[in-house]
Length: 364
Ligand SMILES: *Cc1c(COP(=O)(O)O)cnc(C)c1O
Image 1 (cartoon, rainbow, N blue to C red):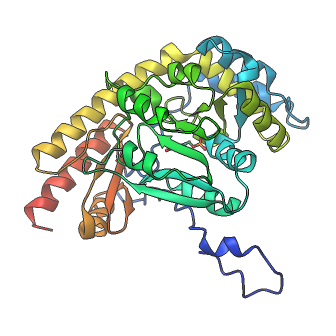
Image 2 (cartoon, rainbow, N blue to C red; image 1 turned 90 degrees about the horizontal axis):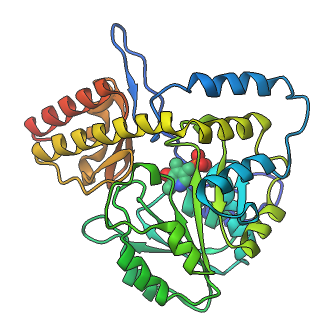
């Protein structure tokens, strides 16, 4: 929370209720061994050489503003997914777009419905906007409870965020349940499908967000280059939306928010996706090894379709995180609730499984 009363300047009262974003901790160095950061759902692979070449080239013009309309990037995204460039808005990461979505949908006091626990940026961007967050608890399998979310809609609801696969718990929303849910949502309420982890999703029943978007004028899809594409540090994401919403997002965007370097890197990464996909396939295999390993040890890990697993450890959460850090793997604890562990290097998985085995053995 922010203390808005200690200075001389009158700041917005809504700041008091805005939680702070807790970034995943970096790996702490330990003498004599490699340590691993599996706290931020990052791609553990280094940038592709072909992308680095493009970035080096793009640096040459950093005295100039980038293309404000991100025209070539929107064209490349449009071509890849079979949509029109006018149906795309880009932003400084999908979190940047989320903030803009709040600006274009909500007046203070309007309501935003989302599942909880879900992505920690949601309460922050909603709180900052002055809108009211309506958090709907996940069900017993750490999945979105879409019928409870439908019940949470009121006259004041302007935006609903559905995170699929859900960060930090892992499951994806299924096509049939999403269809039924959308039938209950008024047509003037925007439903945002946050698909940050789309590329890792192997659930055959999962909703096809683009097909859903085509069918529903009030649906938009949020995606990022930060995870599967490995560009987290360049801050570029995109929203596929019907023209009215996409155009409003472009109007409200921070001017020149996506750097030239980020634009070129994203275009090069779309072109190199086959190569990136090999890495995604390897990460999915590693995820499944981690999931099975943890379940074999007796942990109640929910299904995961993303590049992380969720350990619902309750009050043992911080103890587990401390044990992992001691062993040289930094995870992301959510105090009192659970631990999110990203899928990283093979050795990181090995190390984490060792920690998990020792943790149960000592009865902690
Ligand atoms: C990581 C993540 C994002 C992506 O954030 P960027 O700002 O694009 O880096 C968006 N949504 C969810 C649910 C995430 O976990």
